[in-house]
Image 1 (tube, rainbow, N blue to C red):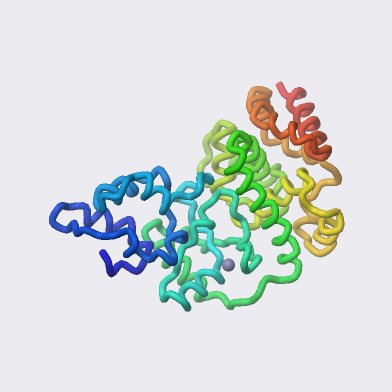
Image 2 (cartoon, helix red, strand yellow):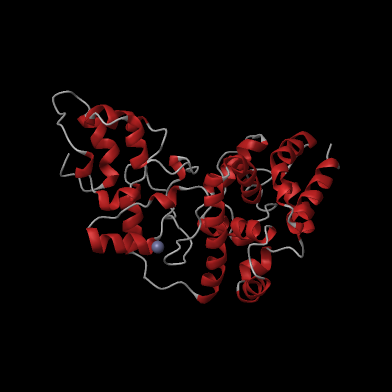
Length: 319
Ligand SMILES: [Zn+2]
């Protein structure tokens, strides 16, 4: 196990090695520590307990090495978003594609280094080969720096992204409200609807093969977990706009240079509230989320209050 070089194999290898004959004593420092932050790990994963038993490391220590700073991770099935440039870079430096933990957060949209939207191959890779397949996918791409218009939006989305991520850690009580808002921007009224989501202007949402009725929480979960980098960036941009995290000049610049922003940004926060309420099919669904979003009112930011008032007014008109 000391010779393990590919974090992608970590899961499989630990499981295979979990028989008493194969166990060998080891030291956590023998693992590739320079990249351990980039090894994806689920805090709730059973592997942490296997790891802790195998190496006799207290479970909390193992967690602190591998868990995700309490930020919500996306469901494993959808964790195929990556920065193509980072994957290529890691291959050049450590000779294998390193999967960054940062890419697995549900609120990660852009790579802050390369200012490109996180992407996944058009065919969803299997979990076992996800990292390698995503890397192979990058081999087929011509590497080019982010375009000016993308960079401009990326800088704003990255700002909102890091704000959201640090806020979720420093103010855990607000995390649910912020994530609910994010989810609302990424979801649709029905899974097969093409429009209706506030962030749909940023990319076409993936279609689901599932045709049944889902409740609002499941639609929102699906929207969040399946959104691509550009959509997530769009949702983050809208949140940053409502929270007034950006300078007016920067927003105007993004509107001028980026057609996605032009297409998706409503005239004012009130309008965004009305649009967002379209995801709800019943008053009950709306009330559930109005409740969840309530803490956002305490920010006392004008745009956010106007948005929430319009959203609540629309919900009240539902049956
Ligand atoms: Zn990158």
